Amino acid sequence: MRAQLLELAEHRTRLVARAQAEREALSAQLAPADAAAALAMSVQRLAQRLVDEARRYPLLVVAGVALLAALRPRRAAAWLTRGWSLWRLYRGARGVWLRFSADPARPAP
Image (cartoon, rainbow, N blue to C red; front, side, top):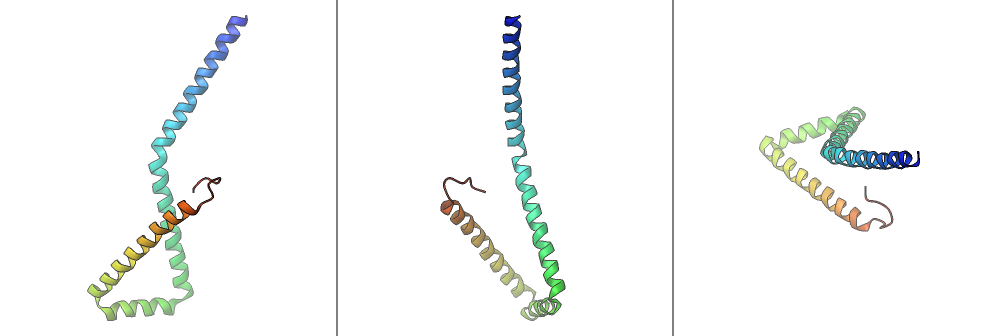
């Protein structure tokens, strides 16, 4: 009877280890999808915030469109490209800053 209980305990240990390995493998496979989903959610939140602001301040939207028309499309595209580059630079620098200024006892986001 004792041998059978030991055998069951060993079998259970192997099953628990196998389940943990499968969880880790699945987590590793889903990590890119998690990152893509997080990006999609942040883009969706940004778009919703922009729509809310546009509804709240319609005159600002009209002024922005008029500015783009006055700058002409090529110049407006150049300004948008510069703005996008600056935004990406800011986001990257902010990420580095947060990573190095984080409390070492607290896990990084």
